[in-house]
Length: 107
Image (cartoon, rainbow, N blue to C red; front, side, top):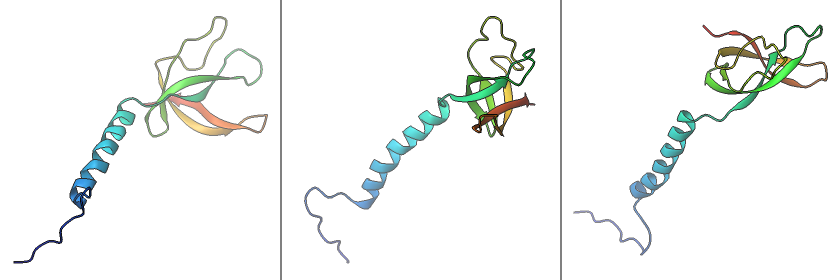
């Protein structure tokens, strides 16, 4: 019979170490997937005469698809409304910065 070398006190088996590392990671991944962090996307304002983009909070629900959060400020008309899920694309703005812009309602 082949015996295992005795372990030094305080050392755990590799399988126990795997459980210690994987369980917290699984919990972290589940929490992140069930409660995604909001990000900023940009929604076009209508009736402005020039291109105007409102930064809004949104949550990613699928690849490149975001659900718009928040409320429309008084005296603004947004192209897409809070609660709608929109498809976003990266776009450049006049100031040289880039951002995710809502381009259409998701199907």
